[in-house]
Amino acid sequence: MTLATATQPTEDRDRAGASRSGNRRSGPDTAFHLLVAASALLVLVVLGGLVLLMGVGGSQAFRVFGPGFAFRDVWNPVSDDYGAWAPLFGTILSTLIGVVIALPLAFGTAFWLTAMAPPRIAAIVGTAVQLLAAVPSIIFGMWGFFTIVPFMARTVQPFLTHHFRHTPGLRFIIHGAPFGTGLMTAGLVLAVMIAPFMTAVMRDVFAAMPNMLRESAYGLGATRWDVMWKVVVPWSRSGMIGAIVLGMGRALGETMAVTFVIGNVTAVGWSLFAPRSTVASLIALQFPESPAGSLRLSALLALGFILMLLSFASLALARMLRRDTK
Amino acid sequence: MSDTAVSSTGWKPNPRAARRRSADHLATAFGMVMAGILVLVLASILWTLLSRGLAGLSAATIMKPMGPPGSSSGLANAIMGSLIQTFIALLMATPLGLGCGIYLSEYGSDTNKFASCVRFVSDVLMSVPSILVGLFVYQVMVAPFGHFSALAGSVALAILAVPIIVRTTEDMLRLVPTAMREAGAALGATRWRVTLSLCLRSAKTGVLTGILLALARVSGETAPLLFTSLGNQNWSFSLNRPMASLPVTIYQYAGASYEDWVQLAWAGALLVTMGVLAINIAVRVSARRG
Image (cartoon, rainbow over all chains, first blue to last red):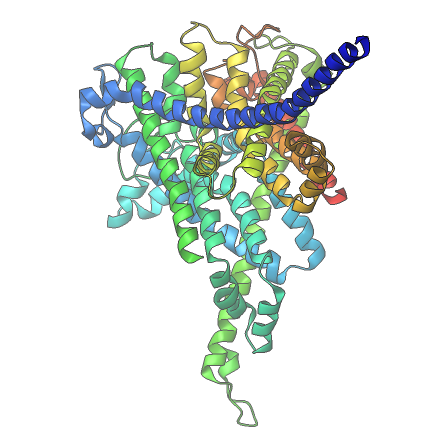
């Protein structure tokens, strides 16, 4: 009797223990699953909140100025009249200049590194370029401010004005007082900033091609350039597009490197040598002076929203092109 | 074009071959010139940084806090502020990034809609202009409380660090062979145990690399700090108040018209670059060993 009552609870406890340990087996697992899923959800929420806050904050500006906000070329804090075209134009043009200059630099360097350079030198230069791709953008901004701006102001602009002042097509592009700041300077600094990054990616892409293909082409009597242009480039097209678009995305949203050298004047014009502004530089400079709830703050947030869309579009473009070619 | 000249034996190269050969010469010259230009420009940046940074660097730079122009001031509080803010940012970003990366690799198969959505969003977040992250954190953490704070700066940096940690964690965990997971399960280990003690452990080096890369990326960021931690001329260890940071100080000082401030900006720039490069080199060395 005493034995029976003694064993009964023990058995119960065992069963309870077993079921509890069974619970422990699935319980922590579920908890772990929920925990990691929650952190994934949080990442989603952060981006959602980012887009939402920009959109909501900018809605006042979009309401006041209509959807044409993006194409109005005034930015006048005194009369509280805003439009996005001047900074947008600056962002797009400086990015284009940057990519157009960086592309041959990056492609040529990657070509040299993979096809021509002696292995030891290629390893050193390749590593250096990869390391320099990680240098913070403010360093490039400072370098541009202290090196490129004076160079532009003292050498390039006087030279251009002296020789091409009366050339019909060029006159509009080089017009402007020799401040040294402007879209061209910004484009140059952006190019120097994204070129190491693009070079590093392109070199990886080129190096990823099976050597067999390269050797076969050489075996057929192809020259170095033939191999590059007709074998390596087609094979790595999607990776190259990825490198270009990623570089473009970096240039689009770059703040520090540009703010130093663009001159920060909200004007629209074709001159590449007159002070301009970009979306990011305008936000960086005017946001601290914009009181909460003001139309100017809303206009800046609307600008941020448009910039977000641009950077999103460039990423989507990269993905689409990559899928197409694969 | 000498290739096309008729030689004494009357042999003449095929004009197409000659064209290919001259195109090759041109391309070779192009590649060398481009590489030369890029290397020279980058060397010029490093040279400017070194020569002007070293001139401004002294014991006082590291020991003394910021001060008015003309006084012998340094960057000590900015250096400390940067260290504190990046450390707290990593403290927040690491668990979140690890969790998200684990979710994507262990639970997010390719057919899982939510997982592919998160994967895409994390990629988008990686390419979001950093100034917009600053704006976002300003709206969420600065405007409601009415004051700038170091915590807001850390959150902004954390948002930039998370997607990098997510990507490397997922990639590294995916490299862990399925057999390892099956072996763990066969021994009776639960799934979380397999994930943490087997997969994460064997992918340790790679995951650590991701965290270090995030650190390198974040420690030079200026734009997201402008509207969040703002900067501070004085010592401050409170997370609830504005805090100085090296990049923001560089930004403020570089444009100043005082010679000693500009010099300090260069010294700060040198310190930041050295830090970032040192982290990257450490990553490289550990990757080669691992």
